[in-house]
Length: 97
Image (cartoon, rainbow, N blue to C red; front, side, top):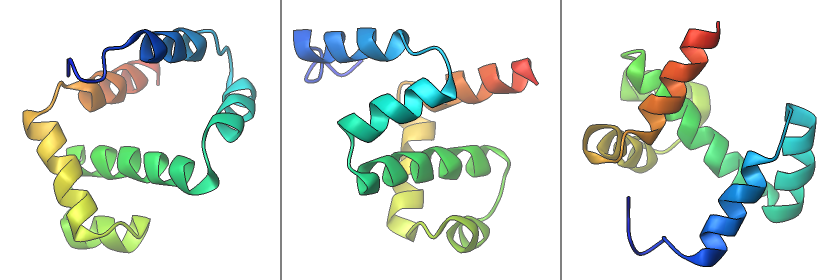
């Protein structure tokens, strides 16, 4: 965990997110908290991570998501050297299917 983001305010935000119970509540909350572009950027990064784990090429990912190669590279770096957050949620979602 990055100690730079570990603050009381971030803790409160995460506690608030953990109270959300369904996609409709997520839409309501995140539309209030994020700009449209921020939300679309977050969702794009998650899609890039999912597709990288499916062994798609940068070109396939860029064409399907519209993500730049810089964004794809950044997400790939997080997958390889990050905190395994993407993998944690990707694997949990696979288990639910």
